[in-house]
Image (cartoon, rainbow, N blue to C red; front, top):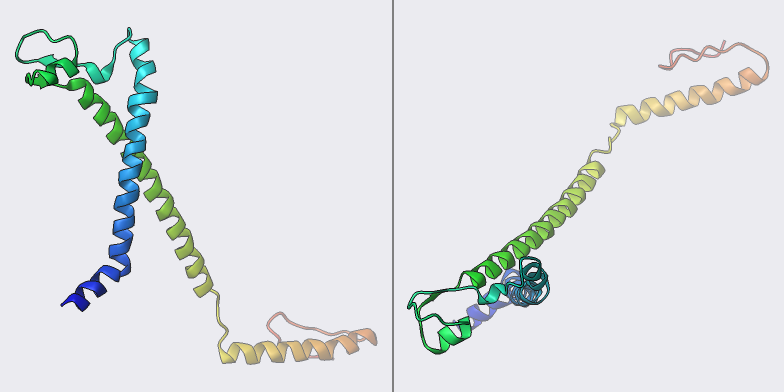
Length: 163
């Protein structure tokens, strides 16, 4: 049973999934920091010095000045500023994943088209090869005749013979 579990864990898909989860978690932290520390402060400044992470509704109606003070008092709050930050995090991550998938699909599509193009190269049948050899022989015979000044009629389909 342990051997089966090890085989399952070492399959490519499970390892790829684990790597994807770890990278996704790290990417989520980077995006969260970007939204909270880089993107929202200038937006808050433009909207009148609003700190989005501190926007909340105090359901206890005690009038706490900050979200930290309300949380320290264990007051019930609706933290819509944090929710807005999380929504923005989601949109940025979703947009990034969209582009990664789109570019990956484009690369796979190009690879499939190249493989199809390589398969679509026409392969001559034995009859076509033989006919091409006959045509080439007739042309080779016609060249010396032309050099001696004789008229030669070589039809595109190979019906003409040297005169």
